[in-house]
Length: 295
Image 1 (cartoon, rainbow, N blue to C red):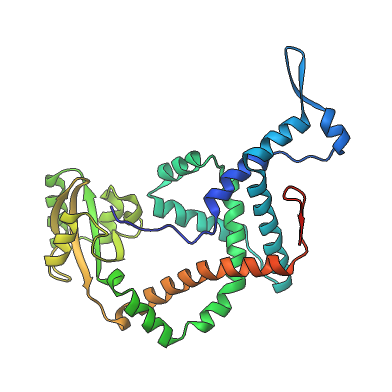
Image 2: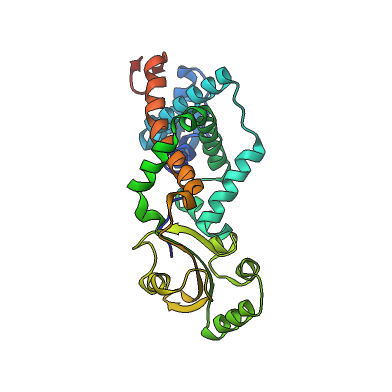
C-alpha cells in the first residue's frame, strides 16, 4: 500500500543475480586442460570447460568479476580498519528485508525473480555491512544539528503524516476491532494478530512517516481528516478495510529528529559508498584479464 524503499543495500540484487550465473563455477585447471576437458557430450560431441566458461562469461562475466573485485577491496579495507561482521548481524539485516517486503512468501518470491539463493543475498548483505561499519563513524560525525535541520526542511513533505492501521477483509471485522480498541484493547497487539498487512503488523501496525501521494487516496483522505490520536476509523480501499489511527500530522523537527537522523544517515551512506568504492579502485592495483586492463 505504501510506496517505500527497502533496507539500505548497495547493488544487492542485481549483482547477486549475476553471481548466481558464475559463482558456482571455480576453475583450477590450466588453460590447456580447461580447453579440452569435457563437461558434457551430445551424441558423442564434446562440450569443453572452455566453451562453458566462455558462455558464462558472455552471460555476465564482466559484471560478476567487477562484483568480486569490489568485494575483495571492501574486505581488505575492513581488515585494515579492524571491522568485523557477525552471522547474527547479517541475519538481522535479512530479517529487516523480509519485514519490509511483507513476509517470508514475498521475500522468497523476490529471490526467485532475481535468480538468487539465500546465500547469495547473505554474501551481499555482509559486504554492505562492512561498508556501512567503515563509513558510518565519519558520516555520523559530519551530520551536525544544522545539517539535520536542513535535511528536514528539504524533505519536510516526507514527514507530513504518521499513522497506524490494521487491515482486514470485511467491514464487520473492522468494526469489531474498533469496538475492542474503544474497550481498551492494545492496538499493536491486535495489529500483530489480525492485520493482513504483514509488514506493518510486525511493527504493531505502525506505518511510520509518509507524505502525500504515498498512500492510496481513500487512506490518505482519512489521514487528512481524522483527529490526531483520536478514535480509530474504518476506511475501505481496494486492499480491504483499514482500521486507521492518526498518530501525528505536520510534525516539528524536534518531534521527528530521530527519524530524520536515521534517514539522512542512510541517504548519505548510500551516496558515499559509491564515491568511496571509486576511490578504492583508483588507489588499488587491479588486473582484470576479462577487460584486458591493469590499474
